[in-house]
Image 1: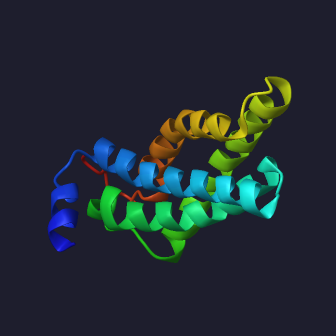
Image 2 (image 1 turned 180 degrees about the vertical axis):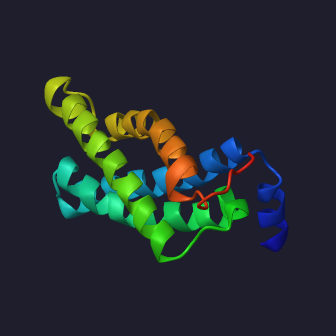
Length: 140
């Protein structure tokens, strides 16, 4: 496992973000799918629970990998990243609602597309604010 983490840390930061985000997105999609198919939840409701589960994967992945060089973690980073994630989730939920209600797209593929669309804003916000050390510019 250490060898894998070392190799991943050698990747450019953007690829690290895609890797961690991809893992979190896979968890998000899996939870939405499971809750809709097996628990009978509505997709927009399932999306809220899926967001919370995926947030744990995302935050820990970014602390341990994507933004590890910044050395920023703990409560302040957690709260800032949760703020970023909540803003991204609000955009996600709005776009998801549009895809489901207005465009009548399939719930699973709609969520997959929305996750990709929201990811860029999340990366920029996380890099420039949530995981940014005060008074320190991060190379990457």
